[in-house]
Image (tube, rainbow, N blue to C red; front, side):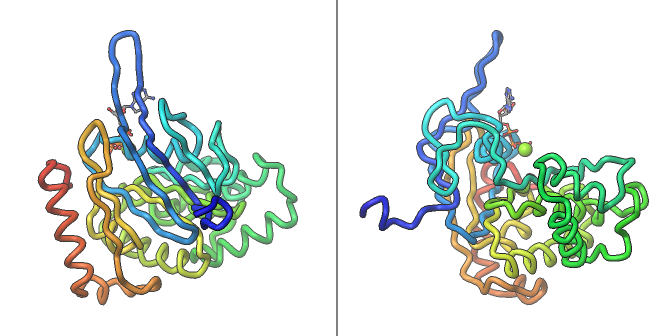
Length: 263
Ligand SMILES: Nc1ncnc2c1ncn2[C@@H]1O[C@H](COP(=O)(O)OP(=O)(O)OP(=O)(O)O)[C@@H](O)[C@H]1O
Ligand SMILES: [Mg+2]
């Protein structure tokens, strides 16, 4: 197929190796990674600690460059930090002295976005994530889940082509995590954003995904991937009872169990 006829993937990772070398040691974090993520897909990445999941997200964001192979965002080679991605870290990383709105608008200030448009967009996101009424609250006045929602709004403010999430709900209690999963599913279904999310939770990996990627221990390789054949918009309890959810979860759990990775 010609390059023009081919649908351009939102993210294309081709033959990527990443090795970290210091004076004392050399660590191969990723080996022979091939992963194409289509626009609007929700790809979750599961794998044992240290297998290179964060490194993979950083490579997509251009924060770490591959030692071999290439990473492309919408057909464009990633050569350094990219502006068109959104990043959500495990901890919300909010500025304590700034309000909810102030933290979200930080994204706009850093990018020099038009402030009127940014404020309007911030308000839409605040409403979408259920933070209405807390615009002026400071981070310490929020629960952990609310802080992560602020962080999500900040990552979505500039309408990134790809949203990268690195264990975004790892620090939350089980119930809050479930609620965040449900909200994230709704946001994804409503906005059609392309998402790559790293998680240690099998249930989270399968519930959220249109495709689950399972990685091996270091050097990280993709050992299996499974398409999750369920509607985009999914209820939580219902989904967990479907044969499809059971099928994929059982296999992912088996693979992670075999590599000793499950929480
Ligand atoms: N900047 C760096 N310099 C040197 N080594 C690094 C660097 N970043 C990551 N590594 C190494 O690469 C490997 C993969 O790290 P990475 O953080 O990607 O793992 P991970 O799968 O995200 O693990 P976890 O589940 O614990 O977060 C590890 O062995 C780590 O020590
Ligand atoms: Mg990590």
